[in-house]
Amino acid sequence: MPRYNECMATLTAEDRARRIKLILFDVDGVLTDGSIWVFPVPATFTGGAAPNMVEPKGFNAHDGAGISLARLGGMKCGIITKRVSDTVAIRARDLKLEYVYMGQSYKMQAVREILEKESIELDDIAYVGDDVIDLPVMREVGLAIAVANAREHVKSAAHYVTPSRGGEGAGRDAIEFILKAKGLLSQVIERYIDEGNPIAASMDIGKGGL
Image (tube, rainbow, N blue to C red; front, side):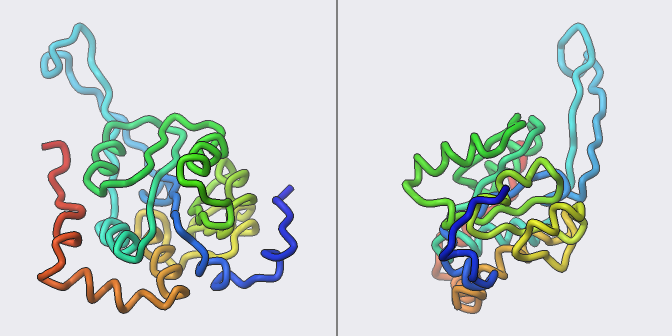
C-alpha cells in the first residue's frame, strides 16, 4: 500500500512538483523506448576466448537537455535500473548524473540509500517509471510520474502522466512539468542558452565512449 501522508494526500501534482529536489528515472521504457538489443562482439575484436555481448540503447537528446535544465533549476538527477549496461554507464557519465544505480531488483533499497546521502525526505523526490517494478518507489515518493507508454497499473499509481512515450522525450516532459510548477522553466531555458553560462556548456558534451 502507498505511504500515507495526510498533508500530502490533498495536494495536486503541481503542488508536489514544487517541493522536488531530486528526480530519479528508470531507464528501459523511460529514457529509452524499451527495446533491448543484445549483439555478440566476436572474440577476435575483444581478445577473449569467446564472444562478448553488447547492449546498445537509443537515448533521446531532448531528455539529455532536460537533465541540464533540471540541474540549472537546482535539482539533482539519477537513474535506478534493474539491468546492468555499459551503454547506460556511458550515457550517465555524459549527463553527469549524481546517482547511478544498476542491477537493482528492489529499487527502494537504492532510494533509501540516496535519502541518507542527501538528507532529504521522500516527499522531495520525483520518480519516473513505466512498469510494475517501479511501483514500490512510485507509491512512496512525493511525485510519481508515469510515461505515456507505461503499464496501466503504473499509470494508476502516478500523480502525472507524460504526454510523450519513453525514449521519445518523456524524461523531458517530466522535468519541464516540475520546472513549470516551480515557476522556473523560462528562467532556466534562458540560462541554458546564455553564452556566458559555463555550466550549461559543460553538460552533455556527447563524447560517448571516447
